[in-house]
Image (cartoon, rainbow, N blue to C red; front, side, top):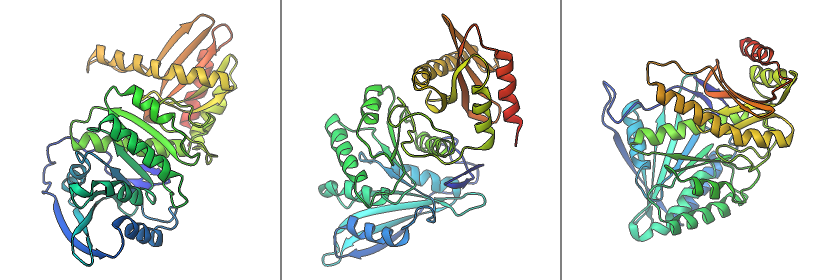
Length: 375
């Protein structure tokens, strides 16, 4: 179970394309709404009235899928897995009843809280595809996280989309704190291009290259970012804005960290010979938090993806019968880099850069494990 600024999350993953035993086909409820102005303006006005304060509003994710390949299928997969209805709102011109846009949403049940709402939008017809951006932006503005799926787009379309989002995030009505880009596998240049854009300092950016093979893989990528956003919002982020090569970036002042992680970093950082340490995402190699001088943290940001890749290579070479390594230690002249699993998290790891001659590695490991045992 995840407890965070987004609430408590129950079902954490869609297991596969195959429906779970007992799952039912997605049920769609059609609702028509007549509007006098353009659909984005109507939706923006409605959300401004109902979601004025995101801290008090119900949890909401918006899926932005310009190529229309995945978002609708994700909502239906969630509906089938959770037995929830897909609500389909048809926005129609009041005078002509012509379709101006479609907004769909479903709910994902959560333990101990209200359901998580997942939205997606489309223009009313292919001839009105230019309205997609406005609808997407109207929904994203009041979401807790917006996920942009870039699969199936041409370079020109990606450029247009990025320009539109850069403009939208600078508008006074934009409140969404987390913006996730799901990229085609291997799109490292596109990932770097996205992260180097001049995003507003209060908008946190993530870019995740993924092999999208099913609605489950798309949703699990979104959910991974949701969890990472919760971790990033509660970790002592001493890295600067837009400096993380991949993943979530915090440009503001973070709230207090969880006690055990704060103790882990603070305790280990004071160990003799430790030049700097931090918390990394074991899957993506992002440095999510750090304690140390700026130059050392810059080195850790470069080392983290390589160490995480070495860990994945070890697991792949060993096969399912080989246990995962507790840590990876690499010597580099007078320094050593260490990546160690965290007992209290399957997705996060501890990383440190130490002076090879002065470091007391047994003491460092002891302090880390002792901090993890604390409540």
